Amino acid sequence: MRKIIVLEHISMDGVIQGPGGPEEDPSNGFKHGGWISAYSDKSIGEALRKQMNSSFDLLLGRKTFDIWEPFWPQHADAWQNVMTATKYVASNTRSTSDWNPTVFLSGDIAAKVKEIKQGQGPDIHVWGSGNLLQTLIKHDLVDNFWLMIYPVTLGSGKKLFADGTIPASFKVTESIVGSSGVIVVNYERVGGIKTGSASPD
Image (tube, rainbow, N blue to C red; front, top):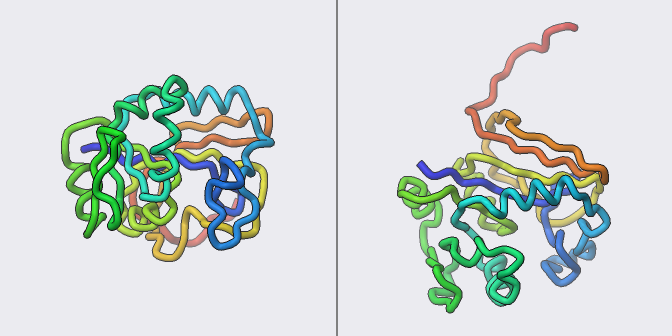
């Protein structure tokens, strides 16, 4: 089975909106676009590059795809794998693109993603795509959260985990602390949550 891996820049208070720049996603009056810019870090960059250079397909929301579609073909030398990856795009308003290979998904997105996961191919990476993420999380379709956690709180903005998040437990399979305070951590889904009384020290 193919895995769905969510890769996100995320603040300490869980915000994933507009990390790259002021114009990326100013929806709902978000004024902090570009909040990752002060945290350049070689070790974090190397970890990110490793993910970008792996074999993958992409699953994107329409808004994220609309941002990427004109940008990456003009900067393919910086990320060649994004050009050859199949890009699955959740959209009820679009059905074609000149940026190939691209497959548009409409209707019951959760059911279609489940079908794609059962097929052959590399793991599927999800970047950005805040609205799509809520559907994936609600239907327990995410296998790994590969998160870059920044030492900043934003107070408002779209969050990774919103209403509809199912109870789940994870194990850490990778962790890096960069010199700028950014933490990279990979959480792998392992099952449901366990409850009980806390043991005394």
